[in-house]
Length: 46
Image (cartoon, rainbow, N blue to C red; front, side, top):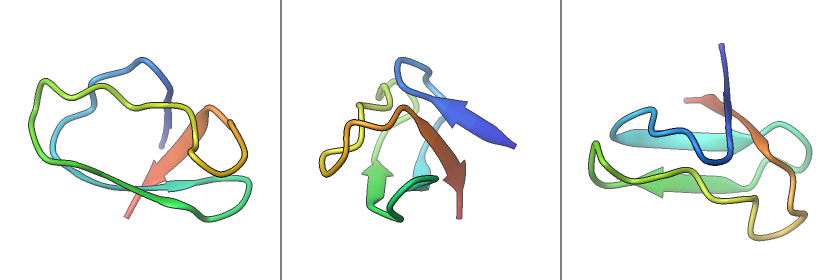
C-alpha cells in the first residue's frame, strides 16, 4: 500500500519510494511531509 504527502496514515516508519529516505511519524495526527531528500510524495510503510 502506498501513502501520499498530506495524508495522516498513523504512527510508524515510512520509506520514500524514490530514494528510500526514512520518515518517522510519532503521532496519529502527524501528516506525511514531502521527502526531505528528493521532494517525492509517495511512501510505503515499513
